[in-house]
Image (cartoon, rainbow, N blue to C red; front, side):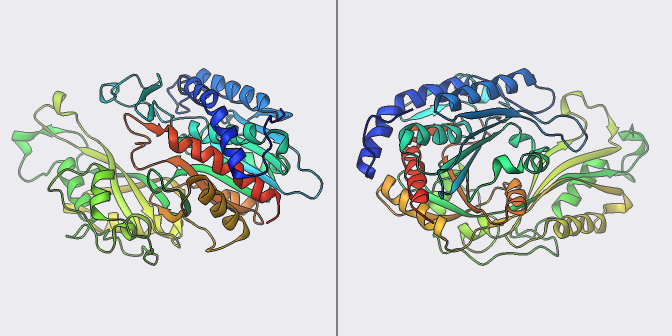
Length: 459
C-alpha cells in the first residue's frame, strides 16, 4: 500500500488520517458486530470468525506475513486464535510490536443496554457496542497507523492481536515462548488502556496487580429448618458477610496485613471529576485515605464481585449450609502477588466467625507494572501524543490490571514497553453501553503513526 500524500510532517499525516478515518470507523463497526467472547459457554466460532476478520484487515493494510496462531493452555487444550502480522524492519531500523486483543467481555444484562450490545450504535461523537473501546478500537488504532504511513513506514512492525485477554490470557505465556522469534521487538506498544480525559492524552506508567479467588464459608453438613434450629446456628450467608466485613477498616481502607502501598502520584484527580466519572450516587461517601489518584493507582483495593448462595426467589425456610464469594484484590505497584495471596488467605482463615469452616481458593494472580520514569521510547511517545492532541500527555496510573505485561517483560527483557489506549472515563469498558469517542480515536491513530515515525528515526 502506497500513501498518496507526502508524510514529511505531522500536518500531512493528520490530513491522511482524517481521509482514512471513515473507512476505519466502518471496520470498527464490522468488528463490533462479531460477538467474540472467549469465555467457556459462548460459541467459539465467533472468536474464530473475529480472528479471520482481523487477519483480512491486516493483510489489506499491507503486512506481507499474516498468520492465525494458537498455543496450549495450562490444561493442554488449545488457546483461542491470535493473529500475528509482520513487516520486517529495514536494515538497521528497530522493530515495534503493536498489541491489542479481539476478544470481548460478555454483554451482561441486555436490558441494561440502550441498544443491542453487538450492533454498533452512533450517538453524538460516540460509538456504542461491546468491544467498541475494549479493545477492538485498539486494533483499529494499529490498523489506522499502518494505513496512514503506508510505504513511508520506516521501522519494522509486528501486530499481535490476542484472542483471549478477557478470559485471563491462559495461553499467553506459552504463546510468547512458542513464537518468541516472531514477536521479538525493540519497543512494545500495548493499546489496552485509557487517556486522562477527552482532549487530554495519557501514557499509563503504572498498573495495579491482581489476586482473585473464592472464599467459602461452611457451617452445616446440609441445610436445616430455620425454625427448628435457628438461633444457636447462624446461616452461612450471615457468617460469610461477617468475614467480608473484616476486609476493610471503618474508613474503607483494606485491612489485610502484609499489603503494600506505592508513593502518592503527582497527578491531581479531583473528587468532583471522580464522582462524575464513576457515576457515584449523590451522598455516597468515598472510602480510604489520601488523594483520589493515590487510592486508585497506588493502594490496594478489595471488592466482592459476586456471591453464591440460595437465590431469594427460590429460598425455603432453611438455614443455608454454605456460601461462597468471589473476591478481587488489586495490588499496588511493588507488591508481590504471591505474598499478597498468602496475606489474604491468612486474614480470611484468622477471621473465621463462630468456628465456621473457611476456605480460600486462589484462581488468578497478576503482577503490577511500573514503567521507567524516562526513556527514549517514552520521549518518542510523549512527542507523538503532544503533536496529535496539541497538549502535553499526562503520566497516569490505572487501577486495573494487565497481568500479561509481566510475561512480556520476562520474555523480552530488553524491550521498552509503552501502555497506551483509546478509552476515556466514560467508555464504560466491561459494562453496559460501552463506547469509544470517535474524535479521540482519530487522535489515537494519528499519535500512533507519529510514534512509529519517531521510533524509526532513532531511540
